[in-house]
Length: 330
Ligand code: 2RA
Image 1 (cartoon, rainbow, N blue to C red):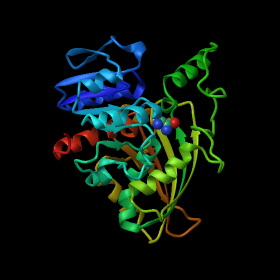
Image 2: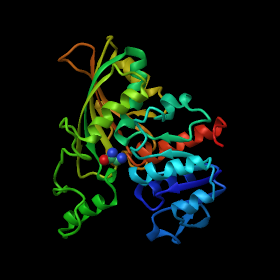
Image 3: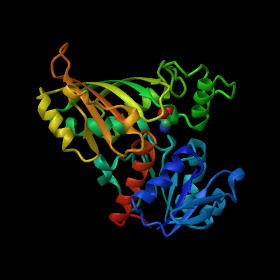
């Protein structure tokens, strides 16, 4: 496979290169793509070095697949140009996620919807991916009515500027601000921009993308998304009301047997998921699984994942792997 990574010098792009190498994705030629200021820079991948090219050059080089993580505007403008050239695009931006003509895919859940005609495939938002990974097997078994989710999101979801802001604040140095407020020693209930309904775009992604991936618009999801000064991954406190009653041990067993999920739930040993330990891992970690005693058929749990891995790069590459294994590229 000739693989273009669009946004190769960004945080997600760098993780994509690591994940491609770790998973031994059959890359015969890497085409790193970035903005004009990075063109010509060398990027090391496995034992070789590749020169960064611009988007137009990348289209002309006709890779088999292009993994995009360069922001919504770039995707809106360029993904169709790649697709018209016959290149399959897996896009990590929000540009195409809710477009009814595009598939929104978490491979463990709905890769079966993909066909050879899908030339632009959307990767869901990071906070949605880890949520639906745990919801999907439980929805199958007990039918979800409503989900209340509160997120505790890593600054890496904002990008390198936010990581730099925290470092500066930690060291008492003045610098560029990624957020309106100090993030060090703080929690900011504001991820992405506000909409007319009072929610942020991040919160509405959790609502809308969940229904699309689980292919069920009767599931109600309400969210509060919060940025915290953490780098390892996003955490989520999730309350789920089911149509049917459940057994907590069976819930634990179902999640344990779900590929891509690791249950960390032992109160005797103080075992529960934490972003510090999720960092650089591809799994979604679930713990604190317990019955909500205030309401029937309702469960509480805590979900953690590395937002740059399963929330972005890993999921994107898993989609590409599925396409390749099922002969859906080209
Ligand atoms: C975040 N939704 O703000 C993002 C990254 N995709 O964490």
